[in-house]
Image 1 (cartoon, rainbow, N blue to C red):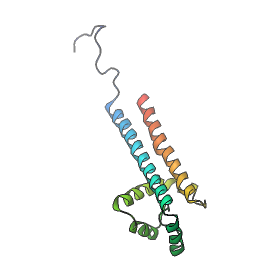
Image 2: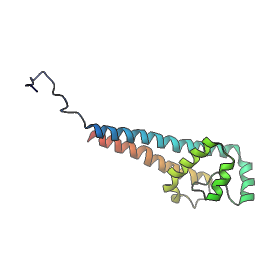
Image 3: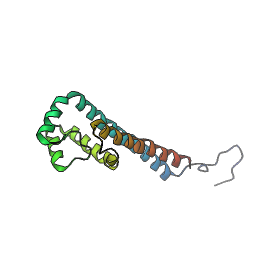
Image 4: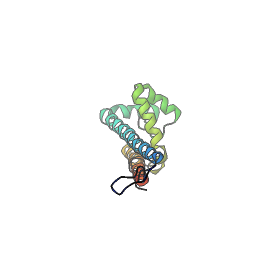
Length: 142
């Protein structure tokens, strides 16, 4: 490489390492995908709640619990839930259950189904959405 003059730019002097850029991109995409899964799962729950209040009451009487709103369902409750859903919705619910599992303990003693679903969803959005996006931003500026 020959001498560089003042008006010529040095290549790669201020360029970020490629591996860091890849990690930042993965974190951002992961943050968006995980947040969308959490939101889609909560929207599915809200739609179910608004459509089937009477049906849920009947199911509670028969099974002793509500299979469709359990955040961390037992295997028996999972089988009941699978029977009433299409494959896509069941995959979405399984992914949502997995993402919300670390936050279930915060609201599991609540008597409100909405609280048992919304508090873990909100905490998951803060962790996966805001947390991973903040980490990506921090890594990008470092």
